[in-house]
Image (cartoon, rainbow, N blue to C red; front, side):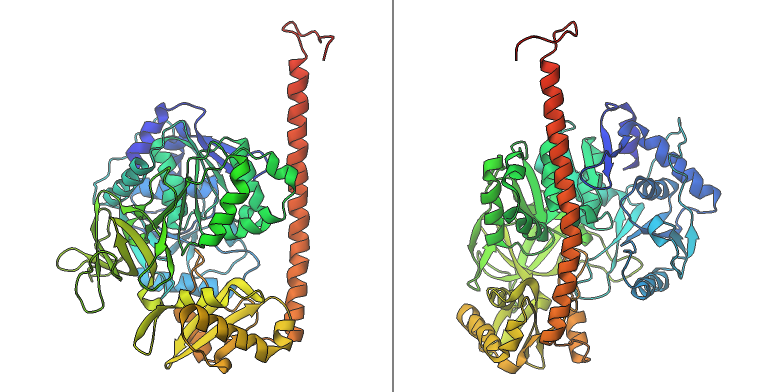
Length: 583
């Protein structure tokens, strides 16, 4: 990565990183030509404060140029940045302090980058000041690194346990970046946008580092900007002639709500015809919602072949398989009878096979655990002597799927598998069946197995579902029976208070944590009165959010009309600056 940054000194000065606080305001622009001097300046700042090569520094990866150059500066110094989630304002401080304490104890880190979001927070680590804004050290050649040297540590999603540190070497990082760029065929002329958090592998590797490697423009926004204004993401793609993006599946579900209620004039102004590739990953893909999203935006020029479902993990740096550009999404029926979406063929340097429960290798179309080797797979977790790979070099991922005509299909996680009367099912099969009902909140259901019993934990969207509790429970049981063919006990269908279903940063249910909370009696059911209070609070938040979105949409309309008026005025001027008489 450092040699790539050095070469950026010779690129077009107009190419670089555009950082947006939201999708509307003017961005901060950092030309790629300045990256080497900014990285060298950050490294010198840390060196002067006693940070030595090999020092582990916890780095809460906020989306800001200062934190990005701190990350790269630590890499230049030979220190080891541990890329972790930042503290989110207005969330409880205790759990975040506990998280940092566990990182300190497990990995021996004593320093934490003093990112802006940590202001006023009591920390279990010594603060390391950020480099001064715009700090540079011009004319310095960045160091050469050995391929096996550690570049940074990223963390697994933590859907089944505390996140595990994955050591990313310069060699593995370069290999995965090379595979991704070769796969999507981007050039330095292309423009890419991302709002994914940088502590997440999709945001850091798929968003930031791929663009730095190619030298193509990256329009980088705060993660909260998408949650505040999902249509703003599409407006930015349209106005800035963006070629590609990288998103998790929940973004489709979330944006779809805004698209359905959007002003027709807002949609008419969108020009999405330049979009060529949008990587889609992180979690199971909601096929009906993806189809609706494409249908609504087809008049805006969005082609049906732009989405590239992909599969990957922190252990491989990022990507393992992906649908290629300009290929429509393929949906077939999985061996368990549920629809499954292709995530494409494994990338060139990976070998993938599947193994059945009995230990035998799977044939075509047979369900099994995904095993892989080669490519950019880490040898072990950070500071853990136990190898990830077996004797034959394959890593058992814990993911389940099947292959058809060379393409890979993901059906779930081994830990999500539920056995009922000798038959295997996935938690997601039950959850989709429950969420077919109109009174269930989408994406707010968890089905767990406790001492052989199936327990449904679901959030509802209207007090009437609780006032006719027995009927609502019967409907859930009936939907599961019709869809999955399994009988549930009514008393094991629980409607719960909002916000109790823990999720990872990429939106995956933390099933082990949810199961433990249930077993310890920490999952609370909801009464009609409590639900009304929750709904009132949500409506108040939506009113605030809605006013922000309306203001932003009006701002975009004002800017669009202003640009149109300016263009019309310029057209009415003669070359000498005199106004023409005619229209």
